[in-house]
Image (cartoon, rainbow, N blue to C red; front, side, top):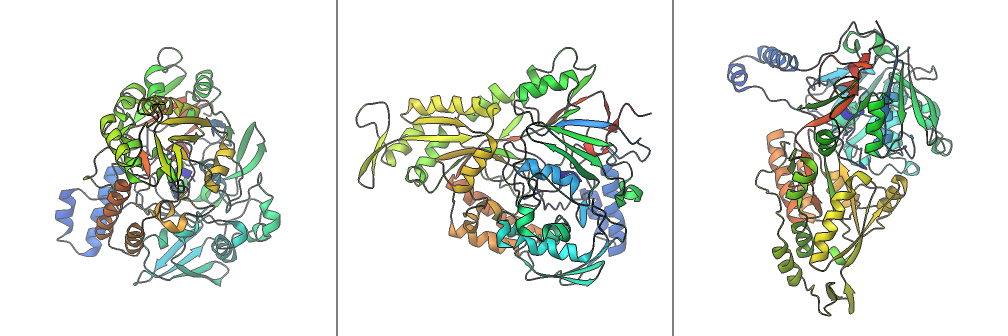
Length: 582
């Protein structure tokens, strides 16, 4: 189960991961010719045309090889050691990536068509009013400890999200529309919804199913930070602190005898190491210590992948696909008086020289981001333009907000709550590779009288401060989603400890429109609403939105075999196999 196709809750990303999102839905558009033809056909014929169109389109991308040999090991870089593997309480990308292989879901999206594919549920029904879903479980699904997967486990997995002791605030927005999950018989569950939230079905279909007999003991399971029991294609074999994490192929996984999943998950072992520094990881790829390195930075791709062993034992790849794209950002803490004035936040954005950064660090391989979803998304409003680098405009806005160098010290001052305050703040972040952006920014801030301290933190320490809201400004990244629901990050109800609205952004009108859009089933209508949300958030400048990648850049060793450079909605490393196998 590729976590890139699984996780919308992957909330706390050090880097913009095009993967992440537990609940993503793509309504793939037909070509104009197909639409014109299909409009004249009955429903059955139209469905045939749509499937044929998707099949033709997906054939351009890598396909699983049903004859791929099994065995061997693939070694990858997880970058950061997961603070916990607990499937309910964890919320960061690194734990979710591991869980994506160990845990399983009722359904999953096919990575070439985005159609639903059966996983733990072999079939399902949706009521005419779209408010009742019935799932029929396979009878040959097992958890890694040998216990069968039953309807009781599905019900427990939903109920656990709302158990206060589990502190799963970042997950709850996606399940608020679910009224109840009922056990009809040991292998049948019925899900009843409260409303027509457009992701109700997606949320349940891609909910990780937990073994009730293990995780129902809350106090005991809370201590299982380095243990994980699921029913996915891989089981957790080892988790050595500071060293590595090893997943072992679960031979009793039902999917290995299911035609749909032939050609997937071909390695016997997946070994993850924790290497933070991109340059160190790159050297390990060159030496053959890593078989796959994803999300290469453009600067690395252009400057550090030349000459031997590149093109011989290790290969670089630049691909375009339809996977959701992410962005990284600098966020302002709205709890701080310093950033409550929109003029100040807009001035700060005008002082970020993204045009020069894109040339210098990214070789113009990125778009300048304009708002809270990637530019290529259907939900991104094309009316929003990038905020340009304009120091003169920034000074004008700062003066308008009352910030002036009254004492001629080279630092702006203002009286706030009766006290003189200098414009000084600290930016916290957890990515050394991105420090060059903030260093360049700091110099431009200094020229207008703003003093920014840059503080690089270890990942777990960074997460603690952001969860607590204990920072001035923060830098992080969000993954994109194919069908965007902004509530997790932008709704004021999630400006709580454990929520994902870390900066405490609150706009009542944004809240209202998000709530309205969430229960709009008609996608074109919902898109119009959420484009307005996009515009409103961008206008408030809660973040300095940095970049959206144009390409997916990665490297692989000659120890793996790929059936193609990329699948349509993911690079597709789940269908690779070992070159050492005949």
